[in-house]
Structures are given as C-alpha cells and as structure tokens.
Length: 490
Picture 1 (cartoon, rainbow, N blue to C red):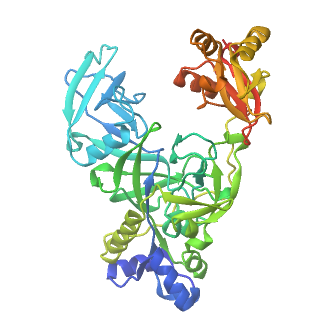
Picture 2: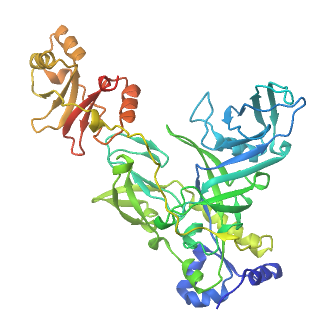
Picture 3: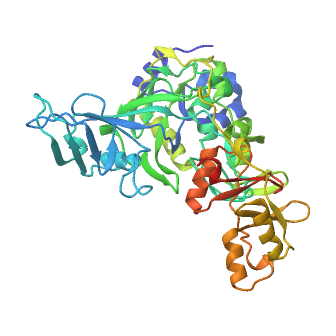
C-alpha cells in the first residue's frame, strides 16, 4: 500500500487526517504492526530542542537618511558580520559580546529580538559619495525590520556522541562541563523523537520540506554543513521568518568558559507513504546507538569507549569500564515532546500542509576533515628528557641536580616513575633561605600536565593561563615521559 502527498493533504484540508507523534507511533506499531500503521496513520510528527551552534539570522534595517554602508556594526554590543549590501547583516549565535564574554551572545540577542525587546544598533562606515553617513547609534525592535530571517547552516543532527573526560582536570566544551576522571557524561538530541532518526534514509526530507522552526513555519534548504549520512550524522540547513517565531523555542544559552549558543526547536512531519516509513518511524531509543567518546584525548586519537543506546543514556546513569557515571542531556525532551505535539495540532487543525521535497538529502556524500598543509607540532615533537628526583630526596640533592643539569625544573616522582610533583630553582632558593631540608615541604603537588599528543599551542595556552613555564609530560597511567617548557618554542 502507498499514499501520496496529495492524498494526505486532502485529508488535512478535510479534517480527517490521522496524525501521531513519534512516541505514539512506537506504541501503535507494537500493537498493530507496520502494515496496519501504514494504512491507518497518515503523518508522524517529530521534535528536537537543543543547542545548535551553527545558527544565526539575516537582518535588514532599511536605509537611514542620510544613508550609511556599514563597515562594522554591533547589536547589543555583539559584533555582527557585515559583508553584504549596505544595511544587511548576519548575526551568528556563537558570537559573544566584546565587553563581557560568556555572559551574552548572538543566541541571546536573537531570543531578545523575537521576544519583542528593543535592540541597540551601533555602526560605523568608511563613507562613500552615495553613503556619506559615518556613524549611527539607534534602537529597533523586530517590527522595525524589513526582514528578519533565521538561517541556520547546520541543525538537527541525526544523533550526537556521548562526551566524557578521562583526564584529571575539568574540561569546558561545546558538550558542556565535563568533570575529571569520568565524573559525568553529556549527550544531546531527542532520540526516538529526533526528525532524522525517524527518516534515516531521507525519503521525505529535503529541499523545500515545510517544518516547525522556532515556533513558526520554516523550510529545509538542503543538507546541513558537515552532513555525514554514512556515519548516521545527517544535518539540515534550515530557514524561517523570525517574525513568526517564539522565544519559547529559540533560547540563548551560555556554556561556562566556552561560549554562547542557542537552543533551536525543530519539528518535521514524516508522511507515511508506505509500510517502510511506518516501520522506520517506530524506531525506539533502544535501537538508536551512538558512541561514548573521551574528550580528554586530542581529536585525532580520541577513542570510542563503547557503543551505547539512547535508552541507556536517558536512564541517567551509564557504565564506563565498570564505573557508574551520571549522565544528562543538553537537549530538552520536554520541549521536543511539546514541539511534536504542537506540530500534530497544526496539522489536525488544517493549518499546516505537507509538501514533497524538490530534492531529497544526499545519502552518499563523504564527510572530510580539514586539509592542513602545514604540519602541526605536538608535545612529543618538542619534549625533552625530564630531570627527575624522588619524593624522598633531600633538598641539597635536588639543588645539586639543578646545577649539574643546568635546568630550572625538577620533576618529583616515586621510585616507579609516577608523578608526584614539581620543584623549580626558585623553590629551592627559597627553601635554602628558610633552612628547609625535605622536598615534601616545598613540592608543588597540584601539577598542570600535558600529554604526547597534545598540540603545542594548547600546551602553551595552559602555561599562560596558569602562569607557569613548564609542563611534565605524562601518559594515562601517570608515568612521567618528559617535560616541555616555554624555552622550547620561545
């Protein structure tokens, strides 16, 4: 049995369409099977609501009098991109304010704009004969704009990895705050409600697909950037009219020590054209698999610890090498359900028709990493042999080693090479002046470390951030492999 878009749209217009959410479809297929579902169900609605960093908006302000051609402009102190026509700009959600970073960014600005708040616009120009105004300082609201178009190059990932951290320090990432020593785990996505999980082969999703976007109606422009269908990491490029949208489904967010973003609400109707789609839209969380990935390891060597289902992720606790780890989502399941229900109601009330895509998303495109023509240097390329003393050494012995090896840093270890701390020549000078004799009295035990595969620029940032001049190089068993200091690249 097959249906057509025209048949389904006629049912919507006549008020006798049968619509269920993706969660309701799972139960229906369990009880009745996919064949009956294909006959009786016309549309399955999906939803997702979570941080989508590759988002932003095109705004048109209209011409001032006299006119200005923006060279630089700021919206609520967020620097917007201007490389378009005179009074158009693009504001990205990850752009942060210049004066108080991490507190406010482009995502918050778009939320405020949609909420009807006044936005401060400051801009300057190099001036031309036809654009003589050099500066402008004004306020506007969304109703003052000619166009306010949400245009998101990469949204609604088909699935996300589960991020963990094996190191002994806290990591601040786009997957949130990851605690040391597998202290927590974060994932994202709506699982069985996720749009692309319900149409994994993109039979009904493509250019021109009408969707729920930010509380209004939007459209799919095509595949999103970094679209990786072979890895089940499909993405969408979407757009819609901000003037139709709601701040309930567009929320600015801040990640501590990482930056700003915006949670975006997206819902896509899946027409049940055949039995195959009925079966696919009955996918449940136990069938959607992803990887647990250690973000404490540089990307090129980042290990996948194991596969895991969204059912286990949503349980709130996962197993990593026999350790129970608390797990939480960066996405809102509450809002995903609300989006799927809202879209269901729009369709049942005849307010939302389905349209076939002009072209479906590609299923065979290859995802490629960046081509790098200059070889990066890693810690292992510049590290040198560490000068080591044991934790039971006397200070005099350590001082002799500093003189003998002409070094400023002594790594303190156990007799089996486990890191215990670090001592500098200044520490020794200070200890001798204070008549101290034992290393344990002066050793710095909370040591900032690095690893062989950490890029040099990352190691340099650590030194600058912590105001230190050297880092012990260790392996994952805390064995000392060497040392790297600022002298290596200065």
